[in-house]
Length: 239
Image 1 (cartoon, one colour):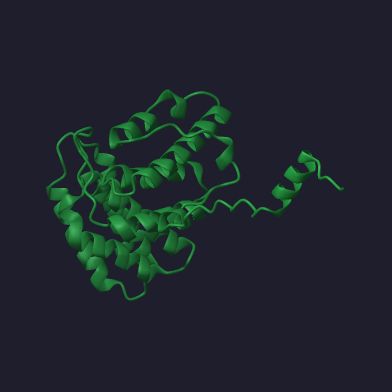
Image 2 (image 1 turned 180 degrees about the horizontal axis):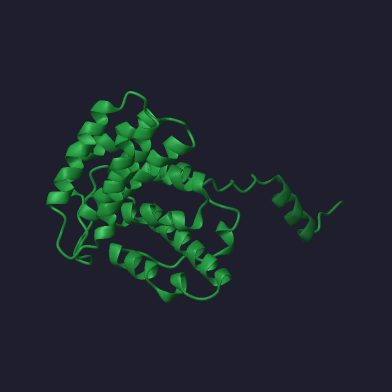
């Protein structure tokens, strides 16, 4: 009588069993917006559970100091740490937008703008903590992100009207929540954008009024060169 050896039977059972199911990571809007570069799986993430953790890692010597290779690696660790933290805590109202804002440190320009657009789509009215910064205001993070996207659309998409509308809408809704320093950055960028718009007279007049208010309310002790940059940009626009 033919007898199947135990080890042969074991092999047959394995071969005939259902294949192990493929592990498929759930795709979310965030993971579609945030790329995983080719180095992503070659670095380890550090645990981040709060806005304070993100701030501490961002300010650490690991990320800022050392030779170029070490800094690049530390920036990649920061990116992956934020990526994993957002996956784990997608509803954290401070950790998520702050990470999104800083993760571009490890990305190329196009990929970083994709993250910036995601931030603005979901956190346009985010108010950042200001306890750590004497001259910061609640809308500074959103304002700078909007500026980055607007300038990208101007310079890479040849879309000055879209770029102008983004910054104008930001100012209409949140100008009072933006610090004087960041307003200066926004106004200089608006001047650059308006240069590419032929029918800009009304827009320039509105910018002139904004600059006049900024001059009247420029904080004492704040470096004047930023305000001078704004005034110079406006003069060039008015030629």
